[in-house]
Amino acid sequence: MKNGVVIAVLSVSLLAAHSIAQNGGSVGPGPSQIAQPETGNTKHPIEYEIAGLRPGRDTLDKAYRRFHKDRVELSSPGLALWVDECNHQKLTVVFDTKDIIREVRIEPDFVSMADCLPRAYSRSRRARIGGTGRGLVFRDSCSRIQQIYGTPQSEGRTAHGEQEFVYRFDRGVKESSLTFELTCNAALTAVETIKLTSSARKP
Image (cartoon, rainbow, N blue to C red; front, side, top):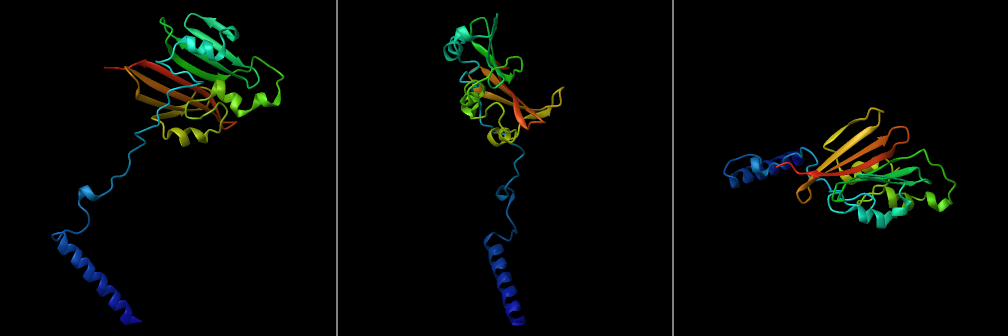
């Protein structure tokens, strides 16, 4: 058995010597050969839309066609709001003087109450007014946020103690930047608010 160990060690030594000779006497990989650790999730999947609306691209007219102008719960200069009474969620659309949508926001609404059919509480129904383009839906599990979008650029707590995630996409819309903000209800471990904002890109 000892002879077997000696032979094995000798074989490894000969292979190592042969490798060093081929690499000009250097041992181990050079700087260019060493895999550098990732410093963060630098390429996040870009989120372009919420509730089928794309800030910086779509107009208020698309929101009216999609959710019906006669069903607007609240309308004021620069803002329109729809409510899903069954799922206690509301959709707020903020637009500029040219009716270009600048912000789309999903958040809870506990003011309105309704007795709805069972199918009205389905995830697909929540997704229509409260879903993102990449499949995150109002009241989804908080764990899905980073599963879909990766590590956020910033993370913290709101004044109400909710966990907050912020993603920024500088290449999202021509001449604009997109900011994607989400909060997570700690008690329910569920997505509480979803907001996507388009703003002029800094030169």
